[in-house]
Amino acid sequence: MAELNEAKARTLYDYLDASDFFRGTAEADSRSRMNVCFRAPTKDLEEKFVKEAVKRGLDGLKGHRLVGGMRASIYNACPPAAVDTLVSFMKEFERANRAAAART
Image (cartoon, rainbow, N blue to C red; front, side):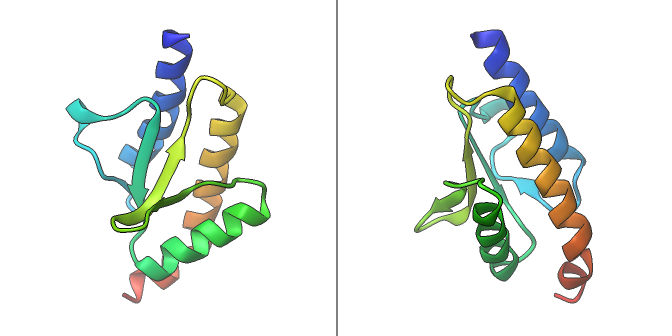
């Protein structure tokens, strides 16, 4: 189970580390394998991301009410395919919203 959880977290963090749109909020040596927190370039894009994610069945991504951003909870019951689906959606969202982020 530990290896599976590490692989799921690595999939998501590898994408975040490569993205110049989304960014992880935790330092590399302090990252959680269960809750991956990240931000988009603006609060408006974060709200849009969460709304569009829900429409695709990716629920529960809204971050803490005081901190904001997004949080992907990838606990033991979360299958690797769900993380792959999230990363695919994030890539698509990034491509579709890059121009909006550049205007800010």
